[in-house]
Image (tube, rainbow, N blue to C red):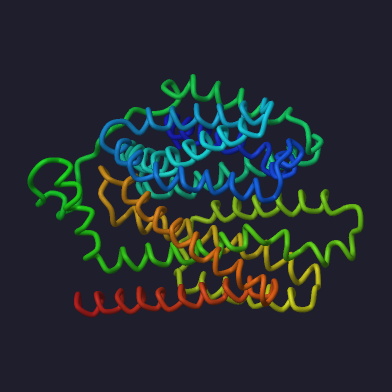
Amino acid sequence: MNHKIKKLLYFDSVFSGARMLTGSTAILYLMSRGLSIADIAFLKLLQHLVILLMDIPSSYIADRYSKRFIIFVSVLCGSIWMVFTAYSPSIWWLFVAEMFNGFSLALYSGSFESLAINTAISEGLKDPFIIINWVTKYSFFFMALAAFFGGLFVKTQSSVFWWIGGILLFTLAVLAFYILPGDILQCTHNENYKKSTGLSIKKDFHYITSLFNNINLMLIIAIGIVVSLSYQVLIQYWQVLTYIPLEKNLVGKQGFVYSIIFVIILLVQHFAGKISYEYHIKHLILALLLVSILLLIGNIWNTPLIIVIPIVAFFFFYRLSMVYLSKQTHREIDNKLRATVISISNTALRILLVVFFLLIGVAIHYIGLNVVPIFILLFLLLCFLLSVGISSKIKLLQNRNK
């Protein structure tokens, strides 16, 4: 691993870690500043809308002009979010802060991933897509450390780590142009892009629409979206699913236990990033299905270990699946429009999340929490069918090539 790639990985790790300093206690801190549960729901809705509006345009600007500049703006917005949240003399400051958080998240995700892969290609790595494993491994390790210190050593109503995170991100933004590699536009490798003619925007649009004819890519993206739906459902409800059994067995220690579980969840995703062997996606989805069945059983029986162990295992296999799917996606798309294509996929996921969270909320109201693992199982069954489709397509291509 050369010096340029190391600096890139450490930059992302500090960015992720600084944001995660408040990850374990963020909701409790916001409530201590006067927000109700309903206010927090509106706050997250505002963040969601900002990301939806900004994700694709910012990623296209990053692809066309400068990924490094967009990442700099993202980190600066993250700093403003944490400082405003720490200061927040009134509730409205928290809403303004959350807008900057939305800007930060929208600007960063596709731009950094695209810059990392293009840098790996330009540096001549034998397998440039291995950098996705490295990003996962480093970022989740630093997030686990940050969540551990942030959750266990500071009171939930304290703004100390919000200030520290804001200062760290501001320092990172100042150093961004020194740490991050320049934007090197690689020669396009995609035939559809080469054959496209006309103005650059028209040419880019023609290339993006041509991707819908790539059945393999569409299946990979579809699996990524659906498995991410199951992940988003669990990330929202895992604390609720474990609350009743933990309340019965660990009276007065729930906060400590939740912090430990959260750190473990981050650490298992770090270990998933260390596995470079690419398991077939069908096998990974099968593992997720088995884990989800155990989760459903544990939820019905209200047994702590039968709930917590499957939850931790789910995050491990999910991250392993997403590393694989991310690498396969990037192998299929053009260097010049990486961030844009990824942001389109992320936008589709966010739109579906709005629809399904409404459905799940209504279902929980009328049926109960047992519907959460049932929804996860249904999503994963669909993923498994899509993964079978990929296997069939690969076999068909192999038979044609014989």
